Amino acid sequence: MKLFGKWRKEPEAKDPFEAAQTAAAALTAPEGTNGTILVVDDNPVVLKAFDLKLKSIGFRVISALDGSSAVSMARQEKPNIIVLDINFPPDVGSTGLQWDGFSIMEWMRRFKEVADIPVIIITSSDPEKYKERAMAAGAVGFFQKPIDHEEFLATVQRVIG
Image (tube, rainbow, N blue to C red; front, side, top):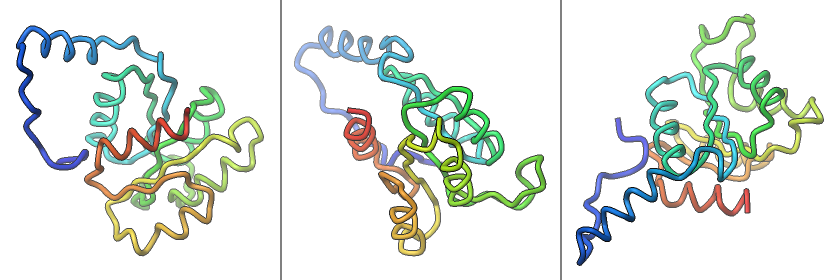
């Protein structure tokens, strides 16, 4: 499963030593220097992909598999941004509530300490079905899986500053 777009070969640097230094610098950005991101998705592979990508560029990444955990983590950790899937299977979560990305956003808006945290929606569903609703609900970005990594990071940088 490719989460962040197509595989592509990076252009080769003229100096191999310079390329190695650049790659090492990107991989050694201290965790948390760029802020904290909460990723909410029921798929552990998606969570791991975001974790690896975002930590490598200096973000602290926390994750949740369901709505109740997402609301709880957001209230405890107060992340700079939330990356939120829309669809969750009916059996996900321990509260008995049927969560989806929209209900999670609605619950977060009820708590003043997390009400203003920007949310980026991700989905593997048809974007025409959800994009307008997500943006109307207050999302600052909307991405269909597989996610364009550069565009996603540009949105994160725009939102965080």
